[in-house]
Length: 160
Image 1 (spheres, rainbow, N blue to C red):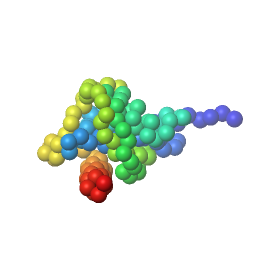
Image 2 (image 1 turned 45 degrees about the vertical axis):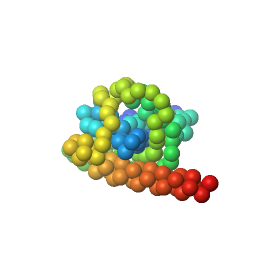
Image 3 (image 1 turned 120 degrees about the vertical axis):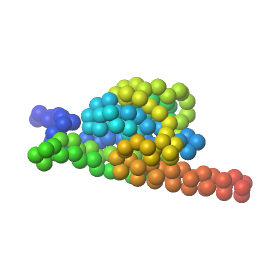
């Protein structure tokens, strides 16, 4: 039996993409994409999951490759479909994106891999750049998750 390898452009099946919302002091880590789709646009660090990797391992690897940071995964935020059609309506890209919440553990930010740039964005910065509406929604969910985790942690500490 011959295995058919799907191209990322005009694929025969969806690709699994893993992204991370890395939050530090209420700022979100973003990268400027160096490859299609979304080349030149700000986005969350992430990329395709490799065979044999868990989702968490893929997210940690992608963040390290694109930003230089080692992160710890905090949990699942959501799963999103990104489907881009060409001018004739044919599916040009199809990614199933698994977005995870992460916190930085060590390292200094530096653009690497296919990232053209890397930057910490506060809410004002995020409002001034054009990013995908689903990315905005995922960031909001991530910040809500982080606040909820912080509240739970403070409640546990106060009762201990």
